Image (cartoon, rainbow, N blue to C red; front, side, top):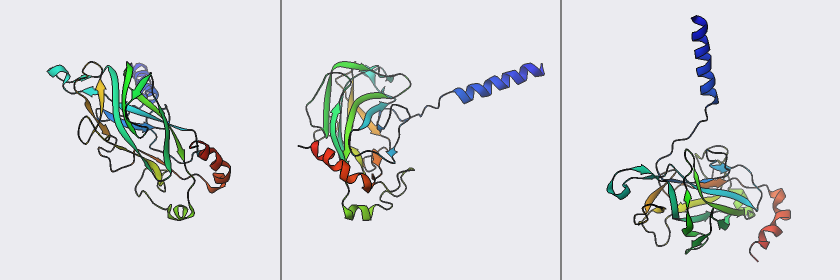
Length: 226
């Protein structure tokens, strides 16, 4: 009997160790992730100046009032809208989508409709877009100011002064909000939240890249804007 109890306890402990830890986000949360190894990185402690990737994702998509019949999980997404506001030397270079799409806004003002709905990933974030960004080289005055620029930021990015904010688009479907479309309920855009439930905190941070890389990388950065 004791042996059976010990085996049961051991099995339970092993299952707890092996079980993945899944972050529980508020419904309809937009996030910027540095990798597809979820949960999200909030920041990068080091990066190359060019060809960096972020994933714009939605976590826990829920339609709170589907056809007036109550709340239910979103199964497919038909489009989204949000603005991406560069901060410091962060620059959004391009945005790609998981299916052929039309953006009637701009690179920084995303108003996107998908050609076909994209399926929601059960139990994890659903990628809405893939963002390529660059970090311009810091000026000498910026280098002198890179101390506790974002006080209280999660480690390892306390000294970050480059990043990107979420914001509503220039002409939002819902005033003051980001949004996305449930493919089965396209008449009613759904409000998208941010990780911090507001727009006054960066959606993603990047620590400054070292001065040693500046000379060799500056030519590559300039080529993006020719």
